[in-house]
Image (cartoon, rainbow, N blue to C red; front, side, top):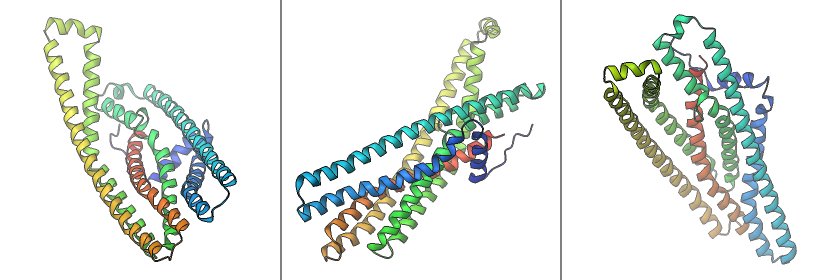
Length: 328
């Protein structure tokens, strides 16, 4: 059995995913269109509500009609947010059902494989790693690839809309947004690629732990453990593996914290570069107060979008790598 795996592109794995989902879970393919549409509506609407409030106060509109209008918009937004949450929950469960189907397919492949491969320790180790990274875990492979691709696409389009709208502030504003967003995403991808060795170590340690636990509770091993006084050795090996896993996980967490700090610094620099011209334009009366409120609120969401998009992009890259392993 070949223990290496082919590195597929994101679009190759997305095509494979949709092909696997098509027979029993065809509605998953609509996730991209619905998520992008709902995200754009929410982005513009949530930025428009404060703008309408400022405009209404400026125009001194009658309170009952104005309050009813704002309340109607807020109720509509609430319904849209609720609908988005329900749809995402449904998509999560459909994705989980697909993963279970892939587990069944993998089980059939194992039953049909040659006996020599089924008892080969190297093959067992690779199979355990492939299934864990591919579709067993909630934070890798199939569980993340399509959802993170859908969410990242929606975030990327939202950032593009904001970049287009900021042309009203300064001509170079979209350049700042796109450049710094790409920089944040690139740094996170570089971080995730550097963490592959940590994830591989965790997978190997997890495999050894499962082996020791299985042997410790196997009835046939009970006699040998008691006869040769192996209990202490089992305890020592399990404790040593637990310490190794803890040490690797701590290293991984430290690297994650560094990555988050870098993204936050980039985010802060971006907002400063965008907010200063905005304040200057409203101070010089080149921008009305309602327009200022709209752009101020819109740019306020940009920081969350940058962090969210960078995280989704890095998750997508890792999930793609994991799925390439799992597809074997």
